[in-house]
Image 1 (cartoon, rainbow, N blue to C red):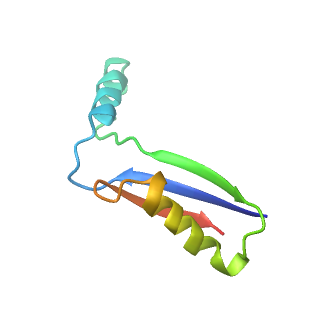
Image 2 (cartoon, rainbow, N blue to C red):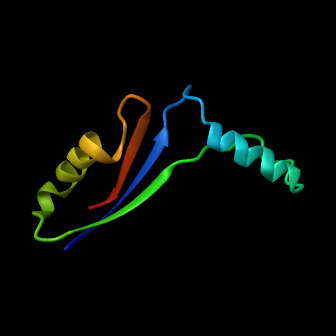
Length: 80
């Protein structure tokens, strides 16, 4: 069994209204240093029976086909 983590972030230049809302809320709570907030996704996967040499390739395919929107998001695969 292989464990892999995937971090998905909006690409630079893509507006992040959820991040902007969180930034304003943090500042309203007194965290004035919160100058830029971006919201992303963290996904953990366990792959049963996956060939260790193909884990990153398979996870990349999962990201490209379902987990990430390649038009507006970048992803990074950790582990595997």
